[in-house]
Amino acid sequence: MLTLFYAPGACSLAAHIVRANFSDTAITDASASALAAMTGLERLRLADTKITDNTIRALPPLKKLRSLTATGTKVTDESLASLRQKGVAIYADPDVH
Picture (cartoon, helix red, strand yellow):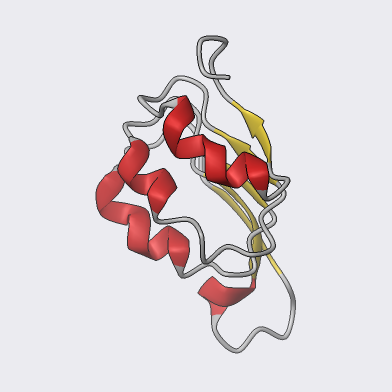
């Protein structure tokens, strides 16, 4: 499922997307730079995808990010720590704290 919500009147679509749901898609770490370009993102869902810590490490430019869902991925707690410290609500597998 791919769902995107954007702020109307946007000049550059990527910078004005506020919610993106890439869950259950073929997205991989190869898309990390495209995600990082979505600087207006507040909510990002990447559940059940093939992303890894490499994608999470590319997300610091997302200053408005408030919620990240990464269940069913190979993401580790280590890569999520910096986002948690910034107040991002993390939804990950139970073994990732």
